[in-house]
Amino acid sequence: MVINWYPGHMVRARREIQENVKLVDIVAILLDARAPFSCRNQDLENMVQHKPIVYILNKADLADADKTREYLQRLSRQGYLTAAMDSNSGKGSREVMQAFKQAYQPIAEDLLRRGRRVRPARVMIAGVPNVGKSSFLNCLAGRKLAQTGAKPGVTRGKQWIRVRDDLEFMDTPGLMWPKVENEEQGYRLALLDIVSENAYNQEEVALYFMSILKQYPRILKKNFPGLPVQDMTELELLQALARQRGYLLKGGELDLLKSSRALLLEFRRGRWGRISLDE
Ligand SMILES: Nc1nc2c(ncn2[C@@H]2O[C@H](COP(=O)(O)OP(=O)(O)O)[C@@H](O)[C@H]2O)c(=O)[nH]1
Ligand SMILES: [Mg+2]
Image (tube, rainbow, N blue to C red):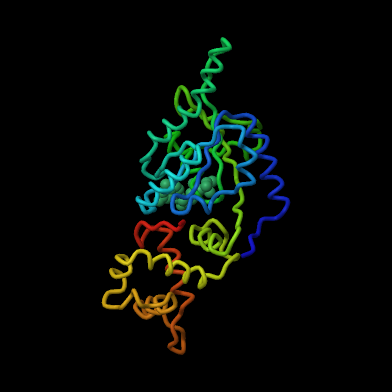
């Protein structure tokens, strides 16, 4: 799977994160709760290792709740602070605030020890495209934020968004590029709409999704009533979907591309239920 990140973009993204991380106390790395480990980019995380990291599993409303619990546990065993979040409803924001507070505590204590004033904790949000960085920021700030930087005449430099008395966010989230290390991870990132459509074959990704659905027999049975779903291959499931919906090509052949497109769109909108992808 080829990802259309130009080397220039990567250099700029890297430099921007490197500069911005100096200005904050905490880095909140957003991961898609449905496949948090596939969304990580170790190279970029290494650049922020000297600051406390809080992992936010966003879009938790779309994820399999049992899996989310497992992923959170795995990350906290690795020594990270974590929280699950739904940036549409705001569910999870208390846990997020708690994690920020915990991350900042040693820093605040150190300031106090040195007789300095404790200022609000400054947080940078970072993550790969589409994980919900803007939504998360808007949700916690409690308002739709104006785009400030791009207009002429607006002062350049960092803007800080006060979330609470003791917390501010950097207005521009750090964009990390997805790092694809194997085919399965590529499929997951494609399903989550993190890599762009022209980088993958939709049918291949749809077949991969069918293999995930096989881990959710209840969902399969509900959507393919009367079919021996457990014994069907991924391709047979995709064909069944096309047949069921009457997605046909001119000659009457099954339109698997149309089925694949529909399947991916529906998964992303949560229409197939709460499904997680990482092992
Ligand atoms: N269901 C759900 N959708 C979300 C959540 N957060 C963001 N989204 C959606 O995901 C898409 C990408 O969000 P956006 O904030 O633009 O992501 P960004 O590219 O990281 O800034 C948008 O359609 C959002 O509405 C969430 O917690 N739950
Ligand atoms: Mg955004």
